[in-house]
Image (tube, rainbow, N blue to C red; front, side):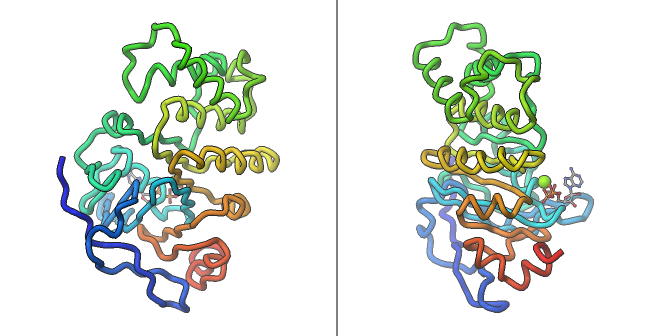
Length: 276
Ligand SMILES: Nc1ncnc2c1ncn2[C@@H]1O[C@H](COP(=O)(O)OP(=O)(O)OP(=O)(O)O)[C@@H](O)[C@H]1O
Ligand SMILES: [Mg+2]
């Protein structure tokens, strides 16, 4: 799988009041540390461009937040990365040189890209532990070891995940008995059990209580120590507390990128999203 070197990098150019980043061509090699590289990615649904020449670069080890109005293309971007949707054009590279546009969902999951969808999908009738056990043994899509006993190393991994997702005390309870927020954490734990390098989280705090949302900030900071993360959210207080770089999507492309306080004072961002 050989792919030519990327030729576009983020280049800040003062525009629209100085806060909006523009993209322009720079020599190859400038994105050596990217875990995810999208260049000129377009997706059309019946002529409507859900993604419109989208450029997005996530550094290895980075946590990035993606915000933007309904229909901006945030979920579609994740669909493209995970192989659920094929782009009409553009480049989608994982770890600098793996072309994701020619791989199917299972192969992409196997590479180490884990995704949490907007709606939590845990097995309600199984216990918290059993959900994690299943996720771990399913190991990125293959169910061949499903009936094998846990190795000591796997059991330790589940213990660590239970601590991270704050559900160690609930390990024997059925997942159906958890609060909505705890189900979201369990699903994040099911991703963690598979040890992905890059995690995509679509609206992880939707429907959570304020206390759960606050705890999710701490939880994601812990996870971010050894994973790259992309977090899509509409909860601006939550995004601010994540304290990471923010990309603003609008009509299928990035219109601004930077720290939250820069983003929040960007006139264009206020116009299309924050001001409404
Ligand atoms: N499978 C599909 N078929 C047709 N149109 C689609 C499909 N998936 C997405 N779209 C359209 O593409 C646009 C982008 O949708 P997307 O779900 O990516 O937005 P979003 O930024 O995730 O929005 P939200 O914040 O509401 O979740 C929307 O107009 C949506 O209706
Ligand atoms: Mg969405």
